[in-house]
Image (cartoon, rainbow, N blue to C red):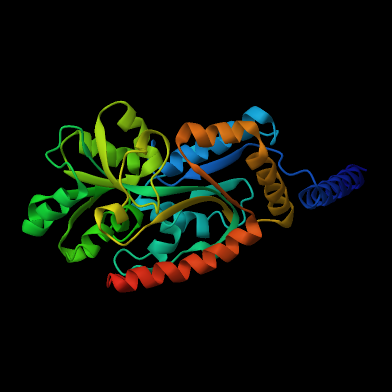
Length: 335
């Protein structure tokens, strides 16, 4: 009797387990995404462009309820974004609840020779480009350097005496923004003394702490410190002068250097993101960029609006990848 009862209980338990498994499988394939908190990772320290972008996306999505589930931001610095890029491309490859903000380093790090990352945009699922920004050459407010030419002349005279810093690894975005003017001025890029930090916020701290003479960063990140009177921007990498607090800052071209550099920022999902999650985010990001709250974030951060949906963004990345290879080749920094 006991044996027969045990068999019935066991069979019932097994049946229930199978039903539960079947039910879970149906839920994952249904339209219930998202069902829990979503994390957007900024692969840098606090205060830089990736961090600000991630927080602006999360803030706007949460405030408008475009996405009902909570969105949180995590900072995962290391290697100018390369450390988390490796984790994202391998450990998070099927995680629909992990997104990442990136910019040109996702292309640069994958194509440069020094500190090369084996992972690039093809190891992700591009979701949207959201903003456009530009590079800036920055010094402390009390610096002896008054113009970009002053800095370049000092580097030309003795490269070892001038420390250029940035929030990304050698050969990555801030480094390129910083050495492009030197390259165009006839200085060997390899001679420029460059020190890397994990994010624009740390690079600014290094400048203010007298651990660097000049930094290369993005224009939007530095605007706050310009307003506070802590720094001066000597030049920006845009084709035309910017608006707002940097409206009086000359471009590289105005300084006699025929070059420019655009910093886009976008949102990426894992490579094997489910179709359900992909469709969800492409739709919600369309809504985001049309909202008044997002437009206010753009203005507050000094960002230019430049939206490309997932399909257009992927095509743009293919084109930009070729441009980056050409740039690195010209600088003899390609892999």
